[in-house]
Length: 259
Image 1 (cartoon, one colour):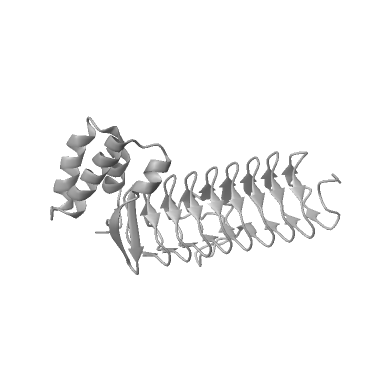
Image 2 (tube, one colour):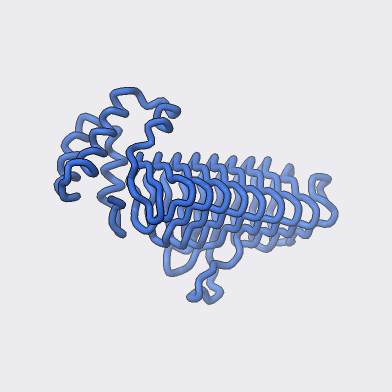
């Protein structure tokens, strides 16, 4: 056994680990688990498969990764969890595999910061560079864009969509879709403007932020029907490409947009 794998860890013969993967005391790596180079698995972590974990991730102690979905319809079908690269998953997080009622796969992208006690349910699709503060909870089938920040104890209803660069305040309760760039808070959430500070940190310039604020006002401050607002923003997006993801998040909403 590799010197990087603690002698008390249990590794399935059907698991595939890169040569430099670290596995801590009493961790369990099950069948059909693949772990990429540079990844560290803490003590008492359980990883079940089929699960693929990419490179340079750090999964802290007592996390449960890739176990059966918490769905009464689940009947033992072979489903997957895929985790990308450079993610931090802190203590006591739970991440479930997908279900055949969706695409059969839960997906976490790259460079996400996932704090303690976060739950990511079956069939969720998480983008890149997201931050989930302690006790954030996703129902099944939630889709999250890139660069989204979730305040502690946020809860997201199943099938909801959260657009890129959105910001959710602490204790937020989401029961409808949140457009890209939008800042929300409350139980249930209400919109409070755009995440302008986050956009500045990501090198959006003044003109881009002004254009996004204007698009937000069209949806939320002018009393227009959503369909009319979408048409107006679509025209602006022809010369303001930063509005494309805002427009896409409005158009793709299936649960209805938070307003």
